[in-house]
Length: 189
Image (cartoon, rainbow, N blue to C red; front, side, top):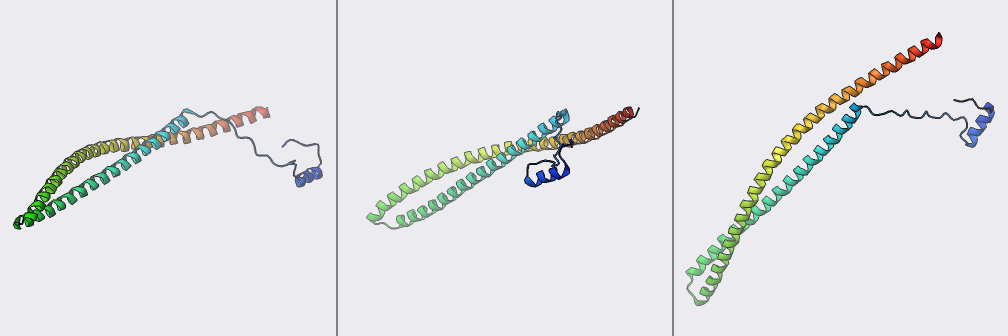
């Protein structure tokens, strides 16, 4: 701390007043240039974070596709139940030979045909969706394997870079110590 022209009593009085005189100031941080291992470590950490974001996005997409397949399957099941109900109603109407029943039977047949065409359409849509989901699932698994291998490689690289940084700090500390010792020796002579 630089020596002040004020007495100790004056400095204490200034502290009480709050002008900041005589307060121990923290030393300014030393500026240093990042070394290549720190830069590589930061790059590896950034790549690791990006890979984890891609993995999360892929998993969310798989969940959405699974939900869509589940909805389509339930639609198909409802249509099958509806078809069976209509077929039962048609059989009942065919058993009754009344003129009014014939009109209802025609209507029931039309409903059955429309239900069957809807069912075929839904089955076709479901098969396309299943094919697309299978393809995307296989691509997702391949991508996840790739991401897992990249993640493992980045973790290994990160560990190596961390060891290099730790090693470099030890060497730097030894070099500073040697420089101080040599400076002290030169100052003594």
